Length: 271
Image 1 (cartoon, rainbow, N blue to C red):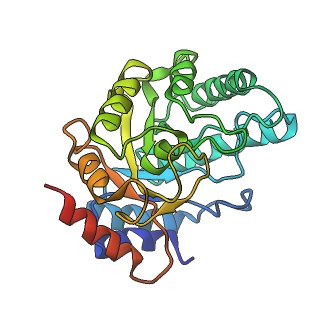
Image 2: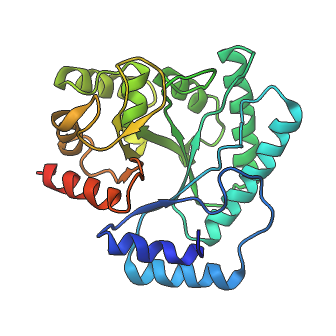
């Protein structure tokens, strides 16, 4: 995977002015912390190359809605550690999936998530790093597949100002929001605005969707090659309410040139 300070260089070579990274292995619990010299070099390169804003994605093992007390408490501790590390890396936001309620109810999962975030926000109250709740496709028992979930969670927080939204286009489509059409995109944005608030969107994961509308199976596709399609992607990229929000690609890495290909298409679609 290389050193973390190599990430700004990779983003710069791709012609990007923003980026999202994992600060550690997303499939494992933390084994150690970043070396101070690596952090210093990361800060230097990020500043030099003007990669801003910086987003760090939370590892997949963290589940702030888990009914398993041991996993729940471990997730809160890991989240606090990751926010503190994100601060020294100069990150603007932490991006997080909203957790799985497992065999319990959505209501119980949301309640646990609110409680966890309140604890996290209180313990990191001196930190400026924001938290972005990412919508999901609704597979299994994952929360966040409808924006009323985000609304309920934000309303339950004592420190709401640090919490915003990450809109994933593939997840939205696979959850049943028909953002591939002009009317469907407008209805989706209106729903977001009436629930959590469209002004809370601080990041867009720009991904085409592999699968049918409302299939709930989380699979990303190359830009223009999925169910949202080129026209749908073009409308999203150029929409007056979205076009000035940072876009991050999470498209398949099935070749060495996949990122360059998708970036080239996106830049061509942008008006």
